[in-house]
Length: 83
Image 1 (cartoon, rainbow, N blue to C red):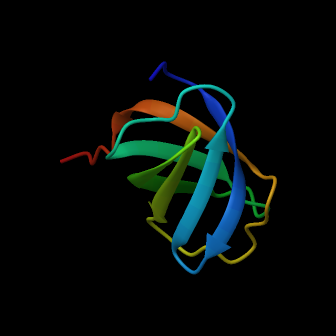
Image 2: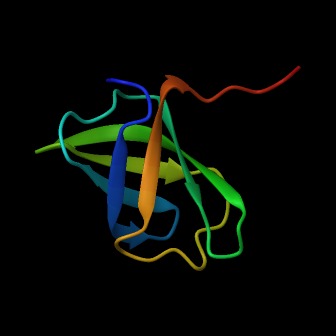
């Protein structure tokens, strides 16, 4: 997957978020990033590729305030933690 590919949220079920990409879907364990309405960064991790350039991701924080149609950015790398 190319870095900085954009997608949109199509479904939210608690901490599970489905994201549709225009071309190729990101790989499993890849980090996705979005900005919430409160201007906070939320990281998602791809857990499953559902097909047709759509992925199912797990949110690494609260999903309150997310809505369908919000833009999501693929990072091209897994989740990273500074140690």
